Amino acid sequence: MVGTINGDTLLCTYYAQWIQVYKAGAIRDVTMKKYELSLNWLKKLAPKLKLRELDRTEYQRLINGYAEAHERQTTMDFHHQLKGAILDAVDEGLIERDPTRKVIIKGRRPRRKKVKYLNQFELHAILEDLQLGDSPDWDWLILLVAKTGLRFSEALGLTPADFDLAHQTLEVNKTWDYKNGGGFVPTKNASSVRKVQMDWQLTMQLASLLKELQPDKPLFVHGKVYNSTANGVLARHCRNAGTPVISVHGLRHTHASILLFAGVSIASVSKRLGHASMNTTQETYLHVIRELENKDVDIIMRAISTLM
Image (cartoon, rainbow, N blue to C red):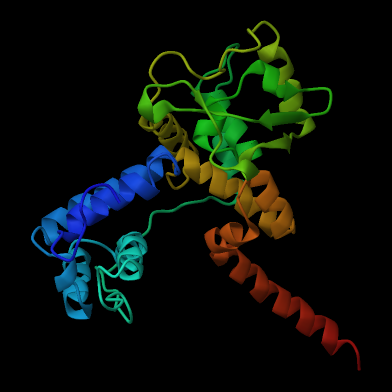
């Protein structure tokens, strides 16, 4: 570790140094900011707590304090981020026993969840309301995300050179860093680098749109980009179409849900979305999978009933 660390070292000091030694440069910027946010909460909740004073009771008090202002899942994330550093401190002999053992995770009651995805008929109504002009704009991005399931940053990172219209595919190999001033950056993970098949109708629409554009320039970036602007445009189309209002990321959920309800395998949906593993897909769309399982039970029962 950087500096002299012993049992009298403050927990927040140890955690700050642990982040710099083990996390800085090894994780994405967005993940690093989550660790830094956890550090800020640690300084707020336990500014004078020393490593040698950290036992199960003190750790539970720390987690309880965080839980007073956060939902249970957020509290669980906070716990996991602290636990990595604390277990290292135990291994180094700075803390006698693991204080995180048998911790009870509490938290506020979850807020009512917003609608995250639409059904096929609602999506069709929104797409019918789009005004697709001669140059790329937010309406074109909405159409593209709805039909490909791309992340917002992935769609922003697309250039004309990424489209292979002859084979009806687009290649995701970078994203646009709209949160930090712009510029091309790597994809979220290695699995996010992929080719996504497009339907013939979208391919034909894009053929005329891409014809005169510079091959290496991002399609949808014209100055500073804000996610809220795109969400605002989509919200207007949702209201015009009489559907629940969703975000651009909700279009990605809608795309995946429609594919799952159509019978596409979880493996294929996971690959199309660029998820790191099928577990991510299963966890994200558990509600859809459960509904499909209920339908499968009905089909199984009908099939078995005909055997006599």
